[in-house]
Image (cartoon, rainbow, N blue to C red; front, side, top):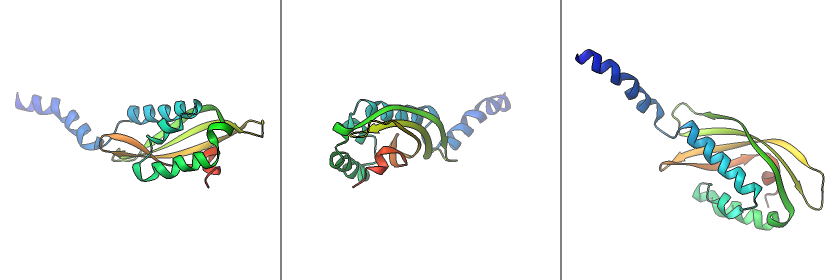
Length: 137
């Protein structure tokens, strides 16, 4: 009887040990929230998904580049998301399309996002590539 109980509990104990961080679904949800905020030019909401030490600089860069006026994100689609072995970090690969006025030609590219699990939530640490990286002051 004890052996049967141990065998039933073993998989759940293993999952708790391996996870140690956030889930794949939670990370994907945060990426989708970020994409949605960018699409609607809600840079304030998007900034809240960044780690606190990056948030202010990211917001100031958006203001300096006049992204609320000049940047339009036309598509933002999560292609892949990979958690690290402890589920405390994630790399998301997002296909993004955009145009920045006065140029009206749509551009596309893959953006790599680095996410970190902190205090029970996924936070964006940085983006590599795409229109937001190019617009850093």
